[in-house]
Image (cartoon, rainbow, N blue to C red; front, side, top):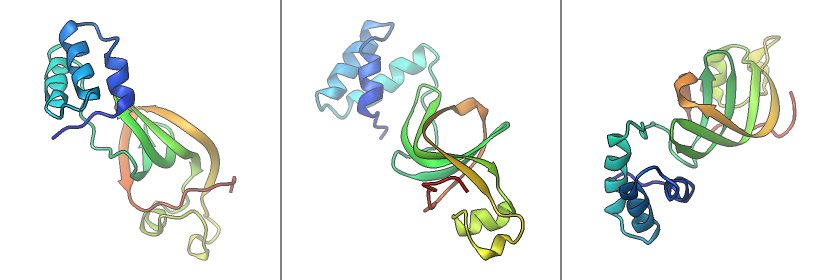
Length: 143
């Protein structure tokens, strides 16, 4: 069953239709089936709410032109918010990076990854080309 986070539900309180506002209010009030009603109401107006991203899970996200690594804080309304995020401006050998899920180590040789912490970042889901879930070690300093 789909579950919207409280940030999404709060934004729906300002939604364009009474049925969206009512379903969001019911979901915030603890009514589990209201989440399904809200999804249906949002789909009726063409809002795409489905993403494969799980709040709390860490991902390496590859967009059309950039890479980011971080933990999903929110996924809704076509956007993904990462916290403890870093911009990855050089992956080194991608196969090594994806298998190790960390950005340091001798395995990279001269082609080691380069990252820069950015804190929070909001990414348009439509710009995502691929994503690698896992227990990523999130960099705290620029490398």
